Amino acid sequence: MSSFHSEDDHAIEDYVKHMAERINRVLLPKYGSDESEQPPTIYKVPQEIKSGNEDAYLPFAVKIGPLTPYRYRKGGDNQYERLEDYKWCCVQRLLGRHHLPQEPEKTRALLGRCLNSLRSLEPRIRASYPRDQRSISCINGKDLLCDVLLDGCFILHRLLKYASIAKREGAAASAPEVQASGGMDEEEDNDWTQVFGRCWVWGFVTYDLLLLENQIPFFIVESLFHHLRTNPDESSDILVSGALRLFRSLRPQPLHSSQIACRDVHHHLLHLFYQSVDLPATMPEPADNLRRFDGGVLEIPMLQLYDYSEHLLRNLIAFEQTYPLTPGHFTAYAMFMDCLVASSEDVRLLQHRGVVMNQMNGVRDKDQTWFFSCLRHGVHMAADRNYLGGVIAEVNKYQQARWPRWRVALVCNYYSNPWVATSLAAAVFLLALTFIQTFFAAYSYFKPPH
Image 1 (cartoon, one colour):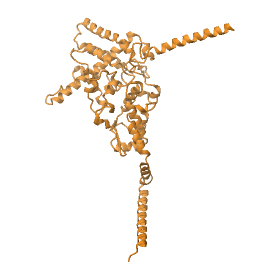
Image 2 (tube, rainbow, N blue to C red):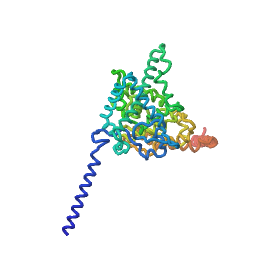
Image 3 (tube, rainbow, N blue to C red):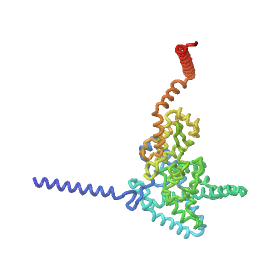
């Protein structure tokens, strides 16, 4: 009997030891790595959000970072091969800015400094991605450094190019009498020649750079910039200026770099674009009334819908759903609009009032109702974080009052049909005549004429 209890005690001790080891393995790495004090910033999009339109989260032209898998066409060729080759051209151009083609030793030394800098950042790079992603944990340091060097130089080249464009446009605006250069210089004008037969691909590249899974940490680009810049006094703010100029075509409203550049951290390009949006929580006092509800009238700023709007908004919402340190305003807006738009009649009313402007090709009113509902598919948000919570509460309170419900019933049941409305008006008129007749009859009875 004692031996039986002894065996049970040993078994329980083994279980306790095994579970304690398992708990320590799970809890020790708080975030992406043991040394990280911040949560990861680049995530795989959860499957419940992806379902319905997985292509909205996959790049079309260029692969950036380790999370995005390679895509192969039916013929077996890599969809991103052209731009993968172009990344090497970007490395060559950035090194060539230092005029070292005749000095290969100096070129190799500069390249070595870039790689050494990235090697020192490897723990931070890995910590920027969730540690449970096999695409991160299985890649060795050499391959990771090579990939982020190519991707970083590709992004750096795009940002410097558009920063130069923004600088020339600013100079032309401040001094109209001085003509800016008639076109881009040779380095900036020959992008289209690098991908023969796909001159239009650069528009898709811009979209691809704003996909959540298609990101690398922005500090990689900043590190490469500090080593590859030709002017040692040049600030990394030029990268922000270039990014906002690059993404200007995705927003009809002008983007301003002053408030964005002064912020300490830009995790990646999607985060930088996210910071550039004038969210109500960060706007000055008069603009806090961006969305008001007063006396049954709801004021909503205009939303312009383009062909790329769904993909862009999906990735911004996915960023809010995966990164905990965001206010969640895009998620709140999508949920608010989905509740507001329930039919094609609602869409037509919003278009008539100038709230929604449809610039999408071949999209009808019925499809726009689906547009808002698909954005919130698989999306969740705490009520206390919803910056539109006060507006929603006022709308619900107004809707539950008697007079608004009676007025809606009257309009829907009688004023929607002109014949019914005419009959109602005639009935009201006859009722008024009957009331007048009854009044004078009673008046003459109680006060007969003398």
